[in-house]
Image (cartoon, rainbow, N blue to C red; front, side):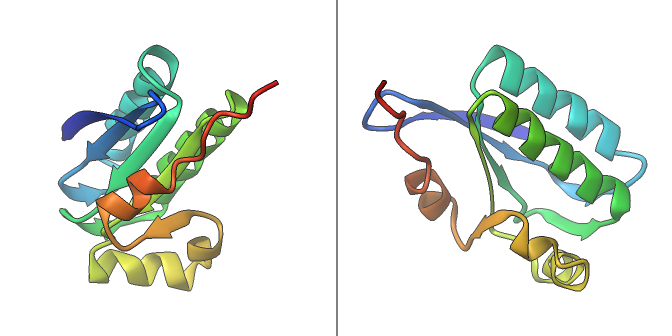
Length: 119
């Protein structure tokens, strides 16, 4: 799994995670732990690039939902991009495509990260 960090123009750090292969019962727990680690130690703003994931099962979807909830708890953001066509079908059939913010490209996902609200 590839991990890169990006800094937005307003200084926000965004983590881009790019898992490869399958996101299923054998790999989802590792992915879930990586999401937790990134959100708690690096940044609450996450982009998951699924361009190299050609299969997702319910365990994979569960890890994505958990990551989204973790980011939301700390006022972060959670976006998905570059969904492989075979994996996109899983999002559509389960109607999870209406739950996640899904972008066509990583650049679009990075630009979609909201600015901090000034209080």
